Amino acid sequence: MFDIGASELLMIVIVAVVVIGPKDMPLAMRTAGRWIGKMRKISGHFRSGIDAMVREAELEEMERKWREQNEAIMKANPVLPDLDQMSAPTDSPKLAESHPAVDTVDAPAVQPEANPQTAGSGAARSAEAKPSGQAELHLPPPPP
Image 1 (cartoon, helix red, strand yellow):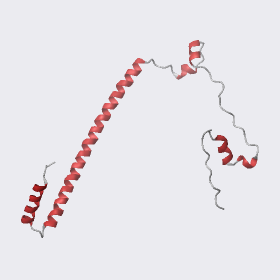
Image 2: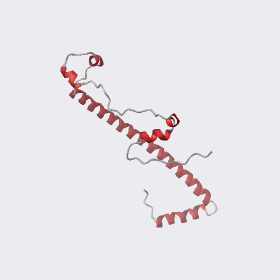
Image 3: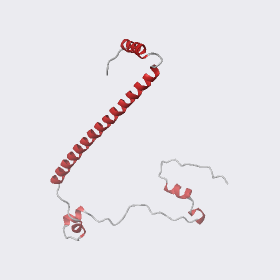
Image 4: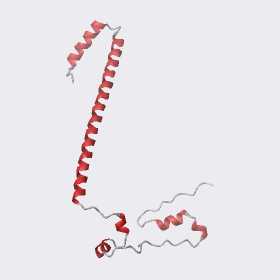
């Protein structure tokens, strides 16, 4: 940032030792360190404020673009019928073809266990519910 080389830094240290003296040098270095720390804290706070403003501006821009795209989509697509119109029976074959009724569900039936001793067993249920191709986890029994 300040583009200070090694020789220039050495010259500053020598002048500081001559002017301040070796006895007061630790106190001067501590004071300089505190000032540098305060400057870094202030610049970090300023930078985070600027970053927050940039994020807010980007968010507003994204929301504006989203609204514009949403409006374009809504204009391009017709409005769907109301829920009342969908639930009312109609004689329209077009509506009946687009929304066929589902009478059955193709799910396998779950059979209850015949043995009451193993009915509560989690291992028996997990073995039945385990999808094919998965490894089964074997745990040791709990200590008595």
